[in-house]
Image 1 (tube, rainbow, N blue to C red):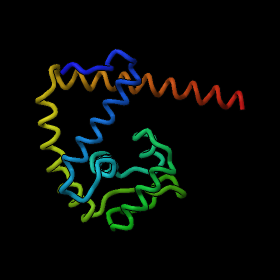
Image 2: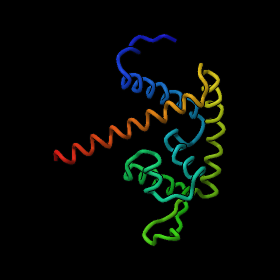
Image 3: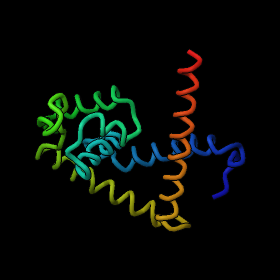
Length: 155
């Protein structure tokens, strides 16, 4: 669908896309307990756990303090398990509890229905879209590192 404003800039396109994705996720997950952002955190532990909080923050591209807020909420629901790290006595390995896994699975049903509809709506292969998104993420990460480095040198 042709939309006005698509010629403004790549960053504008990303802003608009983010607005659409947020609405889509909100509607698709309206009947489950977890919000989309929470489901993403649970999914990382479900798919790749156990992980440390630092590993999780890095993989999710978010500040550690933000991730810790999610972990506190998960802990309050009794969805988070903490175990000593086998090689680093200061770190903890985090994983989902049985009730956390059950909540993830309940949300996954709604998520998968939405994902399937979205992917069927694509006019190019999912693998191409994901490759482009990963390349964009690499470029954003590089630009962010450069800006942070410049700010450190200037400050």
